[in-house]
Image 1 (cartoon, rainbow, N blue to C red):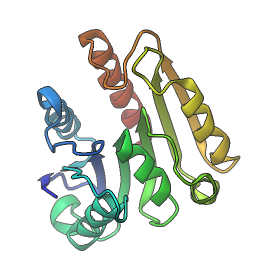
Image 2 (image 1 turned 45 degrees about the horizontal axis):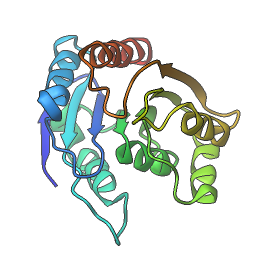
Image 3 (image 1 turned 180 degrees about the vertical axis):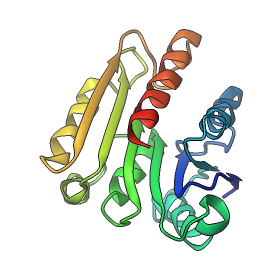
Image 4 (image 1 turned 30 degrees about the horizontal axis):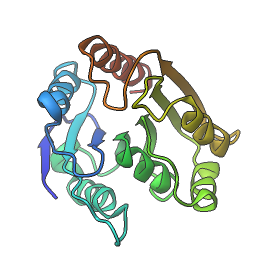
Length: 197
């Protein structure tokens, strides 16, 4: 797993976790561009990771390792031992974020982008029902998207503790490939971060 850090010393960290086999920069450098905007707007430090396939092993291992890396290096990354962590999880990265949501007290916010379907509904429900932070879920409605049904599954599992925003984007595929949808996604993310951080 590759880890890239853009430091900013305000005690806040945004961790970007792509989908299965995703790179640190993302297709067309979309994660790199997003990280630059977050730091330039002085919202938080940003940690980007790759997410190599871990099939037949612990599916959350990459995200778990990244969170533990941030914990150990929080002073260098964000200028504080006590941090507020926001996870942007894409597809399988979103599922992993949801599963780990209640395991780390640092996780205050999550943005789940077209989160992959839960494998173990009971394990996911248990994790999300204990989470008390902010959650934004965005899904597409195109032929290649997971769709609003998956977003609704996550929303139901969260229960009453979490604060949930569920957004559906019309004519949008799983990857937000269309430039218009890609821009809409970036604006949606930045709006959530500005209101939460």
